[in-house]
Length: 387
Image 1: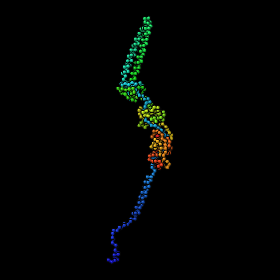
Image 2 (image 1 turned 90 degrees about the vertical axis):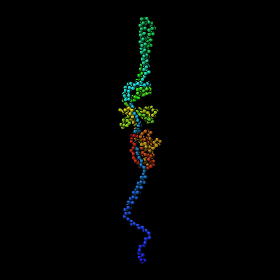
Image 3 (image 1 turned 45 degrees about the horizontal axis):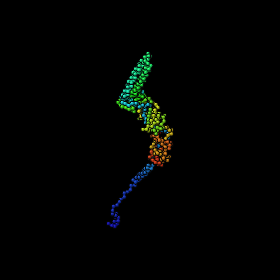
């Protein structure tokens, strides 16, 4: 091989050689819009996520609206007759007869029960015997007096004998009157062992049985009058002081939705030392046929305000010491507002001062803090008339 042929021959490869593939320019052009769209979506998601993290917190807000507000007091009472009498025996003893039972109607003077009175009966028998003896003595003294008077008229007996006979007759007549009085007293005392109804009414409770030994403090029967009924409740002395006869009230039998009107009739001046309450009586405005002893839910209307304000109690901070609420100002920031709350038992807090119509009160103050920017989630205002 000549020298020129060697120059024209390709040089021998001394190692591996990398061969670059040819670039597909059309495919690259197709993927470019997808890459740009993904970058835009990622940027948008990042912006939305950042805004979500940094946006103002949403809180529940109620706008204060003054309206007719009833300050009420709710108690639970029971239906009672106008007159309620506990029947007891004036004497201890053993029950030997029970003549009436629960639910029976009685008239005044009807026998309810009998108590054994053996000793008293023996005394009555002795007084009756003494009365009979006194009668016999009077009869004998009259005979002697009449005979002596006849003899005196004839001149046989002296005037002194007649005077003596007259004195003996007078003593006998006095003894008879005393014996009769003792017999009457014994009969009256014996009658106390027959327990009688002190008034017409209905037997509400019979708490004795035949053979039972009772004391003078034992309640044998409880009688209730017929006709008008009353609603009686025990009200804590702290709230009973503001109650006045004539106040209106709404009542409903426990478990019933039917409401009837009632009127406060009487507030007892006495405080029960065991409960710290005072007895309060109501009377329905209309005739009601309600079983005695039935429990009744009573709402007393203590005061009516034409432009009252109330807020849910959970909106009040430090209610027992320095009550305040959080409100949202016009810039959407939280502000502290001191308020005065009425010391009264009610579902909602009755605001005496510190709030006005249009104020936006935060209902969940624990979820935010003063000066924070918030978003408002509106809630219905507290219903007027039901604090």
